[in-house]
Structure formats: C-alpha cells, structure tokens
Image (cartoon, rainbow, N blue to C red):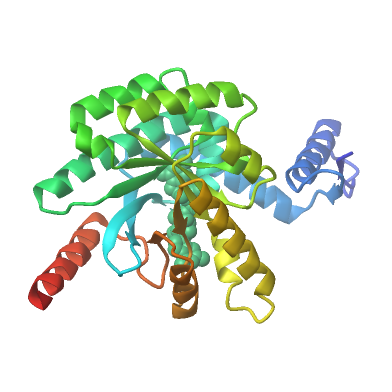
Length: 315
Ligand code: C2E
Ligand code: MG
Ligand code: MG
C-alpha cells in the first residue's frame, strides 16, 4: 500500500485542499517505489509546482527555439571519434537549464514527447547529412527514443518520411535508436514488429542503461538488439576498492555481448583507469567525460576536424 498523509494545521483548511494534499503525498509514495508513507510538506508542494511549471512552459519550448541538441563524441579503442550520442537540452527563460532527466519523463507523461521527438529526429538527421557535406563522417549517430514515441501510431511513418527526406541509404545505416530496458513496454510483440520495420530501413538499436532494469537478459534474448550500452553506474564503481563485484559483472556483460555478437558501448567513462579496464575487455565504443562532455554542434565539428588534422600530420 502507498499512503499519503496530510496534517490539518489550519482549522480553516478546506476539506478539498486537505484531500488534495494527501493525494499528492500518496502519489509521491507511489513514485518512490510504493509500499511507503509520505507526509505532505512544503518541499513536496514546491516540487509539484515546479513539475507543473515545467509541464506548462515545455509546451512553448519548441516554438520559442529553446530546445537545442548536444552531441557527445563516442570513441573507439584507438581514441578516434567514430560517432556521437544526441542529447537534448532545454534552456528556458524563466526556469534556466532544465535537465532532460526532468523534462523527458514529463513530456512522456503529457504526450509532448511525440512533437519533441519528431523535432529531435529531424534535426539529428539534418545534422548527420550536413556533417558529411563538411567531411565529417561518423560510423554512427545514436538518438534516444522513448517507448511512448516508438509506440505512437505515426512513428514508423514519421521516421520513414524523415529518412527519405534527409538521408541516403548509407546514412540511414548509421542511425542507432537507443531504448531503455526500464521502459520496454508491456507489448513486447508489437515492439519487436516495430523494431524490425525500422531495421528494414537500416536503423540499428541499442539497449541503453543496460543492467539497471529487472529483465535485461530476457529482453536481450527477445529483442532484435544490435548494441548494448553498459550503464554508467557500473563503470563509476570500477575504481572503487570494493569494485571487484562490478568488474566481474562488467566482464560477464562483455562475455554475453561477445557471444551474441552485439556491439558494446561503455558510457560514463570518467578516468583513465575506467578507460583501460573497458578497453582491456575489448569494448568497441567508449563515451564519457574523460573524452568529452556533450558538445554544441560547432564544438563537435571543431573537435572532429582538429583530430583529423592531427592524424593527417602524423601520417
Ligand atoms: P542517457 O541516454 O543514458 O545519456 C547519458 C547521460 O550521461 C547524459 O545525461 C550525459 O550527459 C551523461 N554523461 C555523459 N558522460 C558522462 C560521464 O562521464 N559521467 C557522468 N556522470 N555522466 C555522463 P543527460 O544529457 O543529462 O541525459 C540524461 C538522460 O535523459 C539520458 O540518459 C536519456 O535517457 C534522456 N535523454 C536525453 N536526451 C534525450 C532525447 O533526446 N530523447 C529522449 N527520449 N531522452 C533523452
Ligand atoms: Mg542514451
Ligand atoms: Mg545511458
């Protein structure tokens, strides 16, 4: 059971407000994993208000050009940039920078993710094409996709339309859709059908935050996945002295991925020790602050082209 409690401190409090507060507290108890008791308080009230404000302002974010895309470089084991992950940013006049960990779940809840997701896809596809015109050739561009988006009745059509408009066949094979196992929907059958249709367009799939859900292995067996991304929480434990368990865990994930012939990405690499460890495991792709933060498009271009020049000189 999830229980929300509101204390009547003001005897003139309306019954409806009292019930509403208890309801908000109960909802919070559910969000925190159920089976708990939460008391309504000012902090909770502020958080609810903040979320409502995000919900309201998010609605104007696209027309006000407040949404931008960042690109975090992905490297191979030889320290060459081979791809990027698209990460969305929202800078609002009133709220400032809002993290995607806040606005993405809200836009999923309200359905705004459909409009937002379309915009992200369109801009990413255009960027991939634009970069090739500038001599920036990547092996892959990873885009995060919400389940709600993947299941929306226009999604397959939208992706096809955008592919036809902006990408050649070869470019389409560079697109990777990242899905998270925590959000893999109830309807796994339909999910597989949709994934297969998208794979027919050339698009590949990556299982993001691998290892954090409840059914990683079962999904890995069922879904037509091409790549897995080990969650950064495992990587961050690597240089902990008690990290032996994490090391064994990561080694096991690498063994599974190798056997299933899946590409493997380690995200959240923050230091040399972590980098060395995953390279030792024959990790295909590395990503994290140790290499680079997520960058603005022109910063990414500069980083890529500068690195290419150094390579040329070395030759
Ligand atoms: P994610 O897809 O797992 O993305 C990786 C997150 O780790 C990003 O956070 C990235 O900035 C951060 N990161 C990268 N390197 C490091 C590192 O070395 N150390 C640490 N501690 N963190 C690192 P960000 O950009 O805040 O995004 C958070 C989450 O929001 C993403 O997690 C993804 O689930 C979601 N998200 C972001 N952009 C989009 C989007 O366009 N669409 C959808 N559906 N979700 C998105
Ligand atoms: Mg991701
Ligand atoms: Mg991740």
